[in-house]
Length: 631
Image 1 (cartoon, one colour):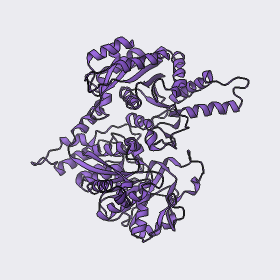
Image 2 (cartoon, helix red, strand yellow):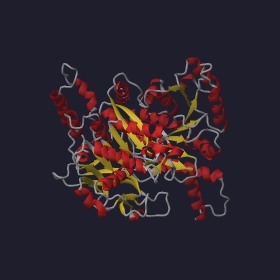
Image 3 (tube, rainbow, N blue to C red):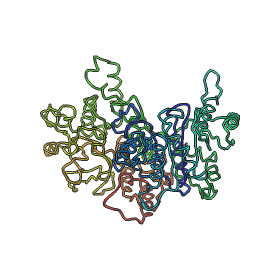
């Protein structure tokens, strides 16, 4: 097992997660199995009780773990399935050591940070690094473990982890441990000169703590010059080829390519003695990423989506949602224009409190081609989400609701179609006369941490009937069962389901008991879909989430075109399949066009039929959400 430790200096939020994911991508593209660990030095047990304004969104794993959003980056880049243990916190480590002390494991000894806490960290890393992360081959253990240490070098809360890895490098041996330090190279506008002193100071502190970097990644606005690279090399005790530049890129898909171009693979091969074949003129291992980045940069046709949320001041609050929208836009060959609308600003009281915000918010909503209402908790801004759902329903605007967005759509429908004016969620109004959204009895717990309905669960589409048209089923490839990740404590009240469906809102997906509503659609609407689960968690750059693809296709008026129908027809592909089908959009340019430059529908159909016939894998009746569309 080889271990690659990623540390950061100068400032937090410098991009260690993207660097870690990019390194993993390069190694995986060269035939190695890669896992990843994120270390967060806060005392919380997990990220489940954080406000999104603290550390961004809470990412949910298959096993129900509520973890840091960087694990979402790892899963998307590496196409891996990680575990809750892949997120280590100070709280988890101390809890484990204290529990063991109470059980008598350290009987007679004084329990201390060194060696007991540091030993626990090392044991945890060794254990988790061996857990399989590939669904297609669960018997294969990883070859490489990438470990990202949160925060910056010098933070007092991170010291036990730094000390643990100082010891760990000798425990596993020099050829099995590699240290990457990510640092900022600022360029003040007053001088225009790139400054190396912050990086020199950061590396000096890291070396003073017993870790010497084998690779220094310099983050900057523009590429660093050779002169700056040589200066960092001289003062930080590394060779020039061990200093690489990662400047601000057009998309994060460019980062693995930048690193590969600067020879990081050769550095890893020399230092870790890894069995990597290296770049070959005959085999471009990064071709998929190169094509992905090129396609992203060349998108021109715009689609405007309004994201109506509660935490719109901080983009990372909706990291997975935004990524899923980008994946879907890329699949639909559309450039995403995302408008952030604070749901509170849509509410009537804002007319008097802040009329400028009110009119700006409604202007963004009305001008959007599609609307997404994501999840959230608490009463703040819920009325704005309900108003957004009403606007889309009444104006035939494509709409996708996720979790609380799903519940908001139900509340709005009950109020304005069923006439239940007091309809609400018991989360917001426990005394509502019509509690169309209620607390789940099996998840009623006064403790908030880890007590929701969490993790990967099955959703069963209802039997096909003329009265139950199901766009979502088509988007998922006409399968009977899908699996998606959940994170919620409230659900649709079953006693109102019959009345709601009779009025035209159809619950097309339910859980395996048939009692819990998972997905809904409106009859006779361009695209009005909502789901209780979080499909964004399983979206991948090359396999976008079907509900998100549906929203983008509908917003760009492609959903009911030949192209839209053919895209959906390619949906069923087992996640475990070993057969690689090229991206649909990569083949479309091969189809002849009309004189006006548009794709010829008959030729497109021919190309797609050939593409579909390339797969010999039979369609399955159960699909993983992220296994659909493209592979």
